[in-house]
Length: 294
Image (cartoon, rainbow, N blue to C red; front, side, top):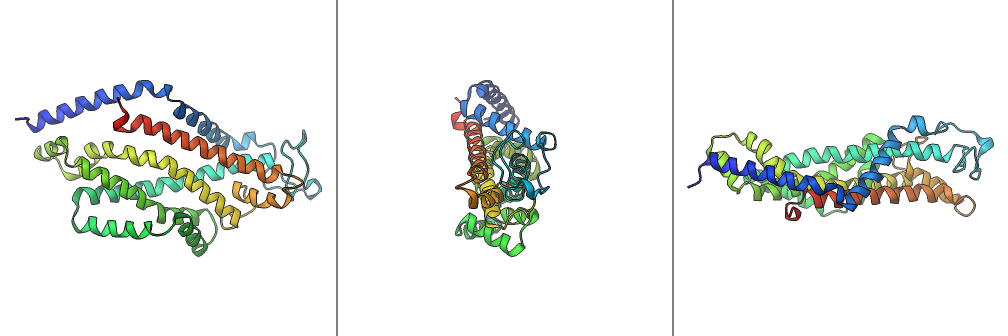
């Protein structure tokens, strides 16, 4: 008969072996590398925005309004004479910051609640799942737009709206993983060994169930950035004159026949950002999913 100590030792040895096998081929994963390169460059541009941007993104100069691309303004200027390239660079800082932070908050809240509900079950699990089912009955973008409209435009309202809606996905994912993990031998052995519930959740179950939530977070960032761009396009996002991709698309669409780059280039940047995050998520799925570690 296997003792609790022996079961834990076997589990740790298997975990170390799995890690050693999964780390080696990461650089050979095309999707992962493409995602790392694209997202890495975007993050670098966002961080270095004060250095890379040739002009102040909010300074207006009506004498230079609606200029075509030139050596002085590589992507031209908008209707207020602001440099489009500078606003595009600073927009990366705004949209990526909001996108990543808007995922982090519901990730922590949803994963914690899902883990607790899945592990302990009972009335807490029942109540949580009913709340989750209620949220899933409404479309994501509709709820975010309604909440931002209620709370008012601005960055803080976007965080609150997205966190209010997005945490349910992480709760459902982590809860399902915990329901499976808590029946495994290493968890049973930890209980028989006298470990506290908190230690079992944090040290043994947590590292094994969060991979799926992390993979989902990559696609969730894409959804959040699209939500931010949509809100900016509708005039409900980041308040002007702050540079933001969605508001740039909205401002430039009225000049699409004469200065097509004003709306098209920010739209292309959104597409490239979404592709980079999607490829990064696919690569992480290949790297972290247990069924693919062979």
